Image: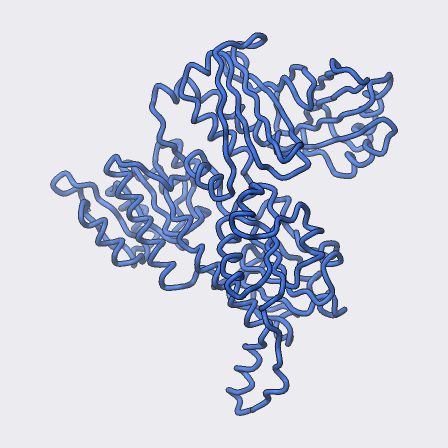
Amino acid sequence: MAQTDGKPSVLVKEKIAESGVSLLREDFEVELGLDMSEEELRERIADFDAIVVRSATKVTADLIERGGRLKVIGRAGTGVDNVDVDAATKRGIVVVNAPESNSVAAAEHTLALALALCRNIPRANASLAKGEWARSQFAGNELYGKTLGVIGFGRIGQLVAKRAQSFEMNVIAFDKFVAAERFRELGVEHAETTDELYAEADIVTIHLPKTPDTVNWIDDEAISRMKDGVRIVNCARGELVDLEAVEAALDSGKVAGAALDVFPSEPFTDHPLFGRDNVVVTPHLGASTAEAQDRAGTITADQVRRALSGGVVTNAVNIAAVRPEEMEALAPFVPLCERLGRLAQGLGDASVDRITAEFRGRIAEHDTRLLGLAVLVGILSGHTEEHVNLVNAPALAEERGLDLTELKDTVSEEFTELVTVRLEAGDASVEVSGTAVGPRSLPHLVQVWGESFYMPLADHLVVFRYKDQPGMIGRVGTIFGTHGVNIGSAAVGAESSGGEAVLALTTDAPVPDELLEEILKLDGFHAGRAVDF
């Protein structure tokens, strides 16, 4: 289809809500390509200014390259796994999605599974459908008065808590990236650690993103710390729960039941858990409601319309709306601010209540909101249900009750530009500072744990606090060598009183936990953290 009467053309490649299609037709030429083959799509993509897909269509780098007129790619759903976002960004194409579309559906399905598990609904239905009247076999348990433990207290976790409270359940939740005040506002007990949650929860539901740190979050060790007779519900990501650990705990009686909607690989139709009386399974139905599907299409269509019309795009996953002159001045500092946010989060021991970003020197002359957003991205990345970016970071922080305070001062005594990130929770705080150096504005770390030094920020960083005495650095180097981890650069800060020093190292690979533990067992070493960017 060619552009008609100057109107942009939109290809709706997969079925979305009719209301979404109608919205697009108000301003654009719309073609429904539901039956378009992959080859035809490759041949026709150059005719369109926008494409709307769901999950079946793969918007690859090659397809994007062929779409010479493409300005926006709409993904009618929460993720963008089937879109090459990097390729789109390089071409200046906005990628939008509908991150909130299935939140209610996922929260409702979580409670539906909990009810089905506690009241033996699937077994009772199957029995009666076979002509049996076996009431005595299906006595269950009430949700009333029970304690629900929510791991991951983002948008969906909070919706689950609210619905559980309507059943008069007690709710306790764990999430390091939600302010304590937000828990109080929602009437939910704040667990400082998962151990606190496991000790109280009769039912545990998990709502974390999938990251290297969260895979198999619920494993043998976690289950061992839960109450006897606990029930486990997973409507988030299949990889979060070790199914073999759940099976063993069901066999031993430690776990009374499990309800699973997601699995490590899908389709997933054969596992020893399936068919057990105390296990309820569904084939990834968390987002599968007519309302959620309609909502996703309508939201995405609206975002596509905004992008093509020059409006404010709120759900872009790759491009933030920033004035060109500000972007030119501040863009080199975005990677620095993201890394400082990630580092401050990685070095902290407690939850986050307050975030302060301080900008000194020439960058303070600009509108630094972009850099504040980058700090939030660094802090929240890997800890939310959806991918964090410069566009959605404020909303994700707001729903977690996290406030960012920006301080600016055009005077910087030691560096032309200086960025400091401080995270606080109660009386505890962690502070890191950095600057950008040279024509390529390379991020450098200049302060951590109260000590000053100067070193480039690499992809893998490890920091130690120890007693300042001879031989300590050599002992660290020896252990790194024994483990085959190469040290790229090192810096020591030992200016404060009390005989303490801080050693920061960059490495060419992630630092194994056993290496850290071996060093921290040495006499005189007080703390150590490894952070990967």
